[in-house]
Image 1 (cartoon, rainbow over the protein chains, first blue to last red):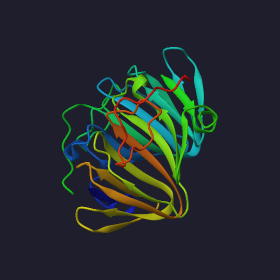
Image 2 (cartoon, rainbow over the protein chains, first blue to last red):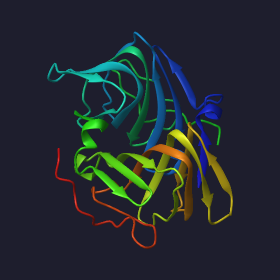
Image 3 (cartoon, helix red, strand yellow):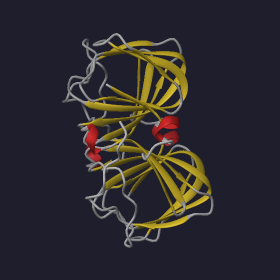
Length: 133
Length: 133
C-alpha cells in the first residue's frame, strides 16, 4: 500500500507548473498501477489546445467551471463539478477555464512524471521520472 | 470523446448502492480506456473490510474524513481531502469513515459495472455491464 498527500506532493517535483496549468502527479508509472493519477489545476482564463496522441485520458471536474471544445465535431461541452470527459479517441480539443478548475486526471499508459505538452499538445512517452517516493 | 455528468449518472444503473457505501461508475470497461473511474461515497460510520484480489485500485479523497488500516502491517493512515492510497499489492484493508467521504476511485482492470463486494471483500471479474450510455 502506498499513501500520499496532495499537500505534501505539491512541495516536490511531483508538481509540474506550465503555461495556464499545473499538475501534481500522485500516482505514476513507477507505482506499477497501469495508469497514472494527477490533480490538475487549470488557471482562470486559460485556453489550452491539446492533443494526447500517445495517451488515453479521463478528466473529472472536482471544482470550477469551463468548457471543452471537440475539434473533430466543433461541439462545446460545459464543464462543471461532476462532469467527466474521456478522450477515448485521442481527441484533439481545446480546454478553457472561465473559473479556476481542479481536475482529477487519469492517463493510460501512465506518465513517467516530468511530461509537459510538446508543440502538438501531446505528452511524449519518454519523459523523465520524478525523484521523490 | 465521451462526456458524462455525475448528477445524471446517479439516476441510472451506473449508481450501485450497498452496505455503507454507494458508487457511481462514470467510466467502465466498455469505454475501452483500460481502467474504470468511479465516484464513491463512504457513509459516515461505515467500517468496510476490503480485499481486491482481482484488481489494483487507487483512491483519492475529495472530501470527508476517515482512515485506512493496512492489515498486513497494522498501520492506520488518516484519510482527509488530498490523500490518495494505492492498493498496489492487492492489500487487505479496513476502510472507516468518521465523516461521509467522497472518493475518486480508479480500477485496473476496469470494472464491468455491476460489481458489489463478495464475502472476501473482493470484486469478481465477471460482473454484469450497465445498460446506459
